[in-house]
Amino acid sequence: MRYIWIVIAISVIILGCYTYLELNNIMQELKDLKEQVALLKQYQSAAEEPLTEIQLYFVKSTPTDFLLVPVTRRLPASEATPLYTLQLLIQGPLPEEDLQRSVPAEAEVLSLSINNSLAIVDFSSELSTKFVGGSQLESHLVNAIVLTLTQFPEINQVQILLNGKNVESIGGHVNIEYPLP
Figure (cartoon, rainbow, N blue to C red):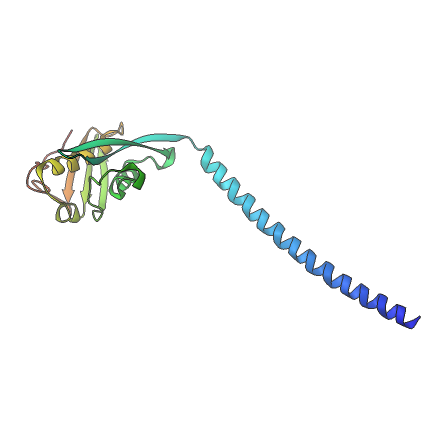
């Protein structure tokens, strides 16, 4: 009889330990599920934000020419700002778009201000020093910046500066001394 009570006691202890471990596993799974639900809710609220279409302009290389082509991207309305759109332009095309950058990747926007429908955008010197050259590509670079910014209703003209200074051109071919419509 004594052995039966010992076996029952050991069985109860083992069953208790097993139950405790299983309960801990279930609690951890519940915690993980709560975190996933929170992430899904966050994603869902971001997905519910209305999307806005913006245009970015990249270069398409053909055997005989370079073309400036618009690319449509859909962004949450809160991100569709002139500065963010300009930063997307600098990031360049997506790999699947099979296009080339219109603005050197090393260029940085130092500042962007909008006054009386004039956007004054100040780039780092890399806009000029990392530019690959040629009159057509310089024209595409300038047009990509201007077209990207003037798609916003509050911007009608763009003044491009380099390191806070008004310069004659980026690569010697296109005059950017004055605001560009």
